[in-house]
Length: 371
Image 1 (cartoon, rainbow, N blue to C red):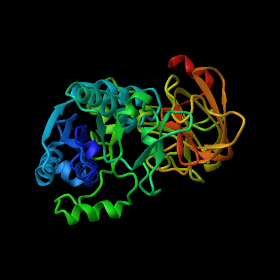
Image 2: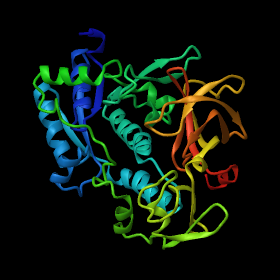
Image 3: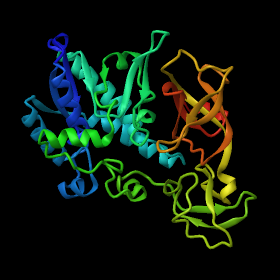
């Protein structure tokens, strides 16, 4: 136990899963004054849905987190962040899908709920840090900046979803399990008798446990986009689509189009209400434009040398170079084409294991005007 940590308070975001549970346990063993907090952000899930789908935000998450806190001997509280979650995550999710883009709600939840609302409230009650069960590490670069570093396990690395945290937020952040493999985390939980040791990981978006985005968007009560035309790249009509909110770049399943070759979504135009289909090679490109830039490891991306980047959570980062088009817009040129560049998703730039930052993928430089 580190006696220097005895007077330092850390609020751990407790999702009811094994990762955040072990994070809290490790911090207590390191001598911190640990407070477990479960964020109430989505209260309309049925218990059975949460249990069956590995949800992290419902009532069973509260129960599991409370039992873990009792077991390891720390206090547990539930804090209500429903309003922040709705404004920053759900409303954006709906708006982006209706605009023909594909958002990443987990990234926005991290930035605006977990690391803004929760951190602000934690500092208000006298805590020095917040901590989560993310598989990531934190270090200070030679330039004196805080940067997120990949975890020791590529299979569970979660740095992609954390690229847009600010320097002030990182200064008050701890990642206790970034140096552990997932199997080791489960072993720790099992050895200390935590009931969540073998609880399955959350796989889908917490507020859509059945993963049916289209139905969620139609049930939410907003005016949904109407049916429209499927076309090929030349503009020839191939059929009727169900509404642009049902599709994402690179999608093949659920199109309902009979054709001699497999077709994929290669463009979505909400203004014209058209979804363009093409062949597999049509969804590959080498150039990505991005805005809403957040710099992390460096104040600016290096423009005179090769780095790496990835355009989705489960992708492997690939070699590229970054060029600034303005202070708010940049271009990434990959050495090799990447599949299904998707407006609304994020691109994250790395220098080895260090996150340099990233931004929101836009369709063309003209889309900077919407930011």
